[in-house]
Image (cartoon, rainbow, N blue to C red; front, side, top):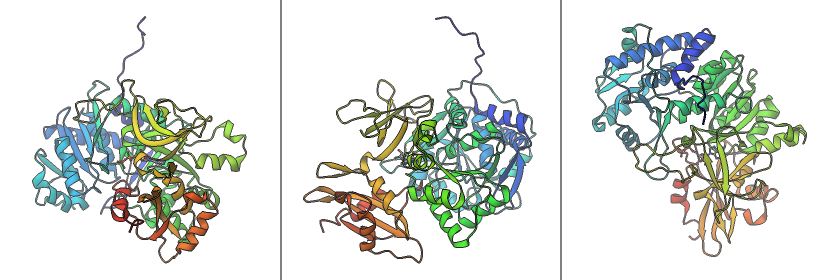
Length: 539
Ligand code: ADP
């Protein structure tokens, strides 16, 4: 081998922030805060304040390799920690505040964090869990001085710490494989598992996500991440927007229709994204109020399957394009993105949209995908043969944090736990999670496909399908429906709606009307549903 003679610059997250400050330093960042007025600054301000908070952390004794936890919403202070903490070579553990107390404690203890930053409205939570946090030495409330309350944990004040430091910082250079973010899976099965993103993975992922085959931001875009900063780094949006020079709008903790619309309208948001629940609520709010998101062009939705009816509604009523993505905490999180291609365009506009909306997304360079059937063979790219979805690449997990062994197979493939197909257009479609597939009379029924059809029935807000044990067929589908407020749907209406749209043997054996529980990451909580309803058909 002849060694290449190009520079060996490590890919570090700090470079993104430094680049943004230099290339488009005046591009705005707007942040909603918990109980403070809207905050406005720009990428130059982000760089200065990240330096200040990093210096404050050095003053508190934080060193490279240490873990620092946040319990925080989508705000500019959280964003500053996204750059300041990894910039030092320390690791930012973004704890998920929607987990149960014991799980939050578990993740902070497992991370062995030395500092805990928290938003003001988590003060009670922090006071509750603090006695069980054995490694945290310093608590810092993310508020201004006027609203600071040290409380039982004797918390320091973010703004006081920051104000004591100057804005010049010589950021260290180190190995791009150093850990930067520690994100835990939500632990729907067993304890949460830690996924430690490296600087290299985050930077490569952000560069790929910015491509036109994925999010394709321009400097004219105004990007509002409604996916949580604590959930797989809000899908990398806090890195992609500064790379592309897009304005960034951070919605804090308020994802209700009024507040979202205020920001969309007031700040001219062109691109937003989040899990389907947020958009179910927003679309219902738009219906109720008769308002229109005039500036909005695209919404990226993932985390759970995007209901076809949701994509159609956004497009037909508001001219907003829905981009479906699939990914997981273990993939930083972007895997595939559903963007148009010439081959699909040949089908005509309408057919192309249907094709895009019914698939999770298309292959992206940097993350390899393959489907493995039950007999261990790689499935053809025919859009029909389903099997275990395996992924591999520089932003895919190799090993969970503090585990001894790699989780990948000897060739580096990671089994996602999803069942999927790949087609000749390079599009991937998830049919189910392995544990959610319904096996009926030796055949598989896709709970996702059934939910997708059911949720299109007028009046339905959320539709959840689980397989419950059945004496003859092994398992049969049970449909649990939550209706929109003030609306009612009957079992007969539901079955009639489905009868026209799915094969007969897929029809659920029963339909129940009840609130549908969601997990800490906004997905339908099938574990709880199964616990509640598993005896339903045999009863
Ligand atoms: P958790 O909620 O387990 O912490 P993740 O957010 O990492 O974790 O969940 C990843 C899983 O979410 C995927 O394996 C897949 O099952 C599901 N998922 C993500 N995006 C989609 C999508 N667009 N369609 C269907 N399922 C999806």
